[in-house]
Length: 209
Image (tube, rainbow, N blue to C red; front, side, top):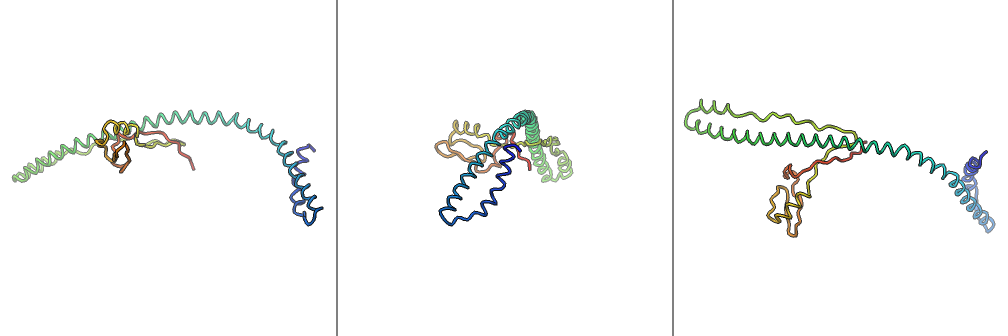
């Protein structure tokens, strides 16, 4: 039997010895103190025996875990770049929809105003024909947000850009959802009002499970 195996065997017998111990006088106190010193010595012996094994196991673990973690981070960089590109494509598509809808709405308002004039003049048929010329809403396909293992996209307020504008304009700053205080202080009063151009997309790690 190796020294370590003997240590393990000895250690497993100490709990029962401790339970049977009764300290009721000076002699038994001396025995208990000696028992405690023996336990401490055995703890050190077991630790000294296992520490080299543990250090070796940890070194072996790092040898394989570190390359895997590096591979994971590298893959996440590639995925993040793709997600960022897709987010920019979606942003441009959404902006195109917004602008086309604004133009469409202006044309619709103009046509409806002209149709009302015709209708008020008794020219209901002409008014109805004109209303049929109202353009339909923009039909632009917005790419869906891709899913990535362990990563997600989030939009954050571009505080650097806002700070720069506030520094330049001070209390004259007019950004929806932003209120400026003296001494260049500002806070977000309504995040939903902040225009999309003040947002930037970033890749954020997402814990699974």
